[in-house]
Image (tube, rainbow, N blue to C red; front, top):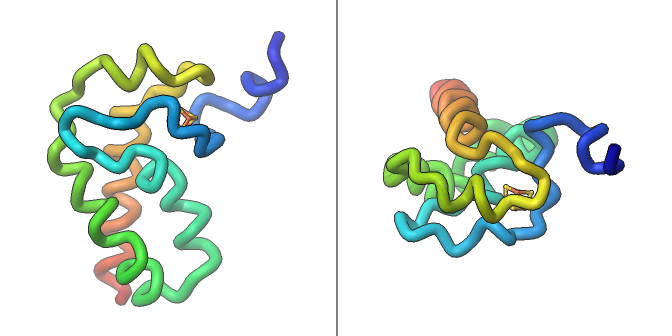
Length: 93
Ligand code: SF4
């Protein structure tokens, strides 16, 4: 089994092969919100990620990104989860 699969189905490698998204969803920035939020104060994390996280609202659950991701990540599912995480951080900021 390839090494990348050992890192789980949610770990984004930021390769950006999934981009561009037709809906202009900033996929890789959303996918990695959790690591950003862990390292920063809530208000700083919100300032730095607001545009990317709000672009998630454009997601139409298309499959183009799924087909392009070499790591077979469940992108729509993960970005929806990260959007919930963002909303929680936003509430603390
Ligand atoms: S193609 Fe997959 S691993 Fe690469 S940036 Fe997009 S979601 Fe992340």
